[in-house]
Image 1 (tube, helix red, strand yellow):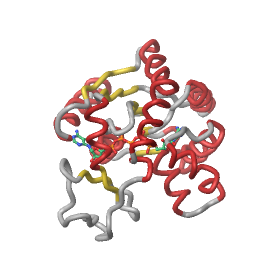
Image 2 (cartoon, helix red, strand yellow; image 1 turned 45 degrees about the vertical axis):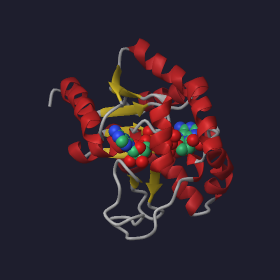
Image 3 (tube, rainbow, N blue to C red; image 1 turned 180 degrees about the vertical axis):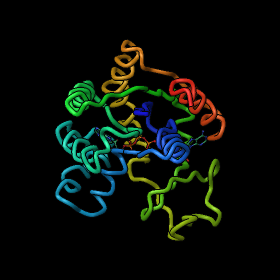
Image 4 (tube, rainbow, N blue to C red; image 1 turned 120 degrees about the vertical axis):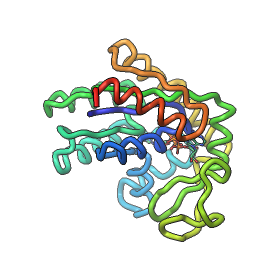
Length: 219
Ligand code: AP5
C-alpha cells in the first residue's frame, strides 16, 4: 500500500494520513513535520528552510528531494507500505520522486486528493494548535485537547503554527494553486487519483478515505 495524500493547506491531509497509518500500521512520512523538526533542532537544513516555511513559501526542490530520499531509504521503507503527506508539491518533485521510486523497484499506487473550500480552510488553520514536543495537532473547536491548550500526551502548552498567520496562509494557498495543483492533474491523467470531499467531521472524512483504500487494495 503506497499512497500519496494531496490537497490544499489545512484540508486535513495530516489528520487523515495519521489515521490511515494507524489503521493499517504503515509509515506516515510528512515533509512538513520533518522540516519543522529540523527547524526546532536548528540543524543545518533547519536554518536553511525556516524563513521559507514561516512566510508560506515552498522550500527549494533539491532540499526536499534529498530529505525524502534519505527518509525512504532508511529501514528500506521505500519498498514497504507508506503514506506520503506533503510531497510532491511541484511537478519537478513529482518527476524526481517517480524516478527515485522506479530506481528502487517501487511505485505509487494511489493518490488521494482531499478537496476543501477556502472558507473552511481558513477556519481550520485559524483554530489549529500544535504540540511543540510531539507534533500532535488539535483544533480549538473541532478536536480540542482534554485540558485547555495543553497537549493530551505531553501536557505542555500548545502553539499556533507561525505559518498559520493570515499572510503566510495567503502565500501557501497561492503556492498550492500555482505549483501543487498541477501535480493533482498529473495523477488524474495517470489514473491513480481519487477525490475526497474534505467537508464534515474528521470521522466522516476518514470513512470516505478508508472506503477508497479498502476498494483499491481489496482489504
Ligand atoms: P505542511 O506541514 O505539509 O503544511 P500544509 O500542506 O500547508 O498542510 P497543513 O499541515 O497546514 O494542513 P493539513 O492538510 O495537513 O491539515 P491538518 O490535518 O493539519 O507544510 C508546511 C510548509 O513546509 C510548507 O508551506 C512549505 O514551506 C514546507 N514544505 C512541506 N513540504 C514541502 C515540499 N514537498 N516542498 C516544498 N516545501 C514543503 O488539519 C488542519 C486543522 O484542521 C487541524 O487543526 C485539524 O485538527 C483540523 N481538522 C482536520 N480535519 C478536520 C475535519 N474534518 N473537521 C474539522 N477539523 C478538522
